[in-house]
Structures are given as structure tokens and as C-alpha cells.
Length: 212
Image 1 (cartoon, helix red, strand yellow):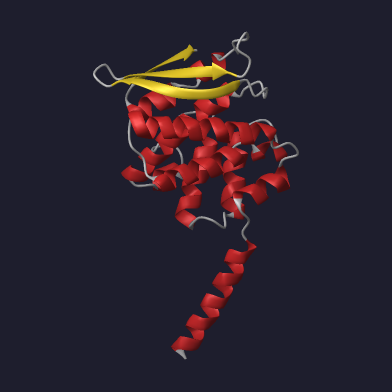
Image 2 (cartoon, rainbow, N blue to C red):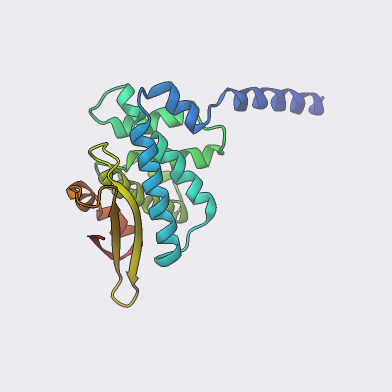
């Protein structure tokens, strides 16, 4: 009898998992134009790799979380532009992600939320406050990276070709050095500068942007 019940539970669990979509499938379902999220993903992963190599090492699976969040951070526009980051979070939670566990999906949803707006607050934010200390650090670090990447792609113009970090460990200063796609044109990165706050909090460093 118990084995039969377990078989039924496993059967419905498989059906539930099969109903979930991948991050790319959700993006295609709710976004008419994927140019911006794809570009943000590219910049976010470059910044992740440089940060992990030179500022603070991070696990490869966290890179996967960031990639999914970068693709999905703006799907909330499907509901409304106002508070779209919160809508993005809810949509990720509601639909789930076939590549990730339920807990990982919550982390990714929160990374989507914190790509703009208020900073993570364990006293005020109902999903974030369910995480343990390690998970909260993951959210802050990856959201900090995503915020900068989104800021660099604010104009949806694909103006940044490459980036790398020159890190002064003694003074805790990370120089984010940017190579523009058009050498004679230096993009306006005001939004990236404005959105560097969470990165600096998460990695306990100061950031400076430079062009080469």
C-alpha cells in the first residue's frame, strides 16, 4: 500500500516537473524582444567571471542562477511597467524553472526582484527573509552583478563589447574597465554607476568605472 502511494506521488511529481518551463522558454513566452535580456546576460556573466576570479570566488552553479535571472529580470513588463521587478519575481515563482529546484527558483526570483528598486531587506521582504545567511549572500552578490549589467545596457543599444576587473585587494577597490563597441563613442553609464550600490555592499568594496 505504501509503495503504491509513493508511486502515485512520484507520478504526479514528474507531471508537475514536466509542466515547468526553462528560463529561455519563459522569456520567449512573455517577452516580445529578447535583445535586451540577452545582452544583459552577456554582460552579467562577464562581470560574474571577472568578480569570481579577482574579487570573491563563487560556485559555477551561481553562474547558472545569474544567467536565468538575467534572462527573466524584465518579464514583469508583461504585467505592468510599474514595479515590473516585483512582477518578474512573482512570475518566476508561479511558473517555476525546469532546470532548478524550488529553493533555487526562489533565489533566482529574488535576484530578478533586486535588479532595481529597494535593496534586499530580511526584516521587510517576505521571500528574502526565508533564506538562510548563505542564501541571502548569494542573492545580494548576484543581484549586485545584475544591477550593474542592467545599468550598462540601460539604453538597449549593445554599446559595451567587453569588460574586465582590475582589483586592488589592499584598498578593496574594483575597477570595472569597459571596452565600447564603437571606439570613438563612450556610452553613458550613469545608470550603471547609480546601480553599483548593491555590488559594493555584497562584495565589500568600492567600484570605479573606466573605459579603454
